[in-house]
Length: 134
Image (tube, rainbow, N blue to C red; front, side):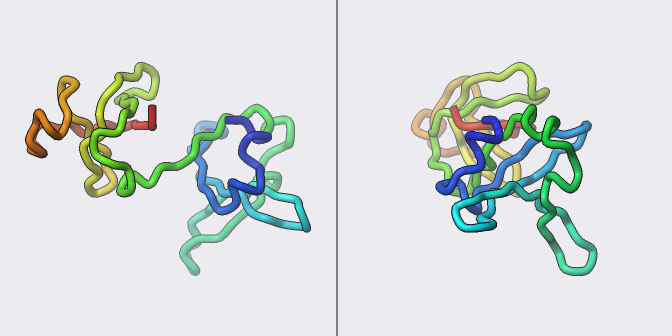
């Protein structure tokens, strides 16, 4: 998604990830003035936990419009056997069925199986570094 698709009323408080200068950044859409919306980075603060920082404070508009954004998924709310794409290198993606999320890691059933054919056995699922909804 580009910035125009992200910064909309229906996306207020949704979180997205993007990459800028080799660093992954977590951002969210916020309402600022009237019907205007903005994109802020969620930054960890040693004193207060987290704070928001306007993306235009750290990059030029010409950089911002080139970024691609991906909505962050709460994997704990994804239903078992949902179609997903998985990867360990973020380049080549495989189709899979979602198994579960544990300790922040996304697991998919092995070899195209599903919860029915695996009888829900966690040992028949593999953890992946990257995952997204299909």
